[in-house]
Length: 104
Image (tube, rainbow, N blue to C red; front, side, top):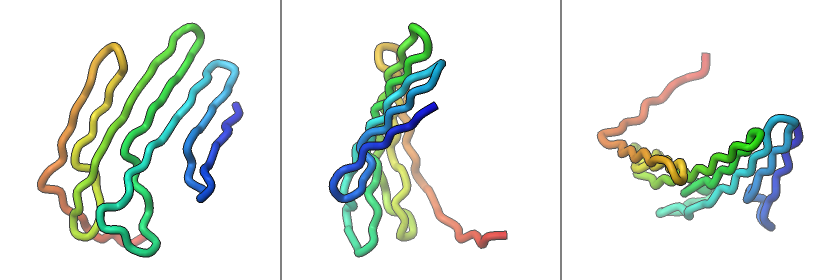
């Protein structure tokens, strides 16, 4: 299996192409800027377009999300999973909290 990653001029992955004997897939991430950018802040994925082909079957998925700030961290607030042409699942996360965990 081979994976090819395309990046933009600042090093952000913009396209993944996966090519295997039994499966081919592409993943196109889209990013949203931080609401309150700070030095070293990471981009947040706002959506993913995924196309997967196994044999003669093709699946197209769109995953969309937005974020909420919880204790200084940005965590998903709304997430929608759309299997194009079939169904959609929408989720909302509320009353979230963060906890610190130390490595074992």
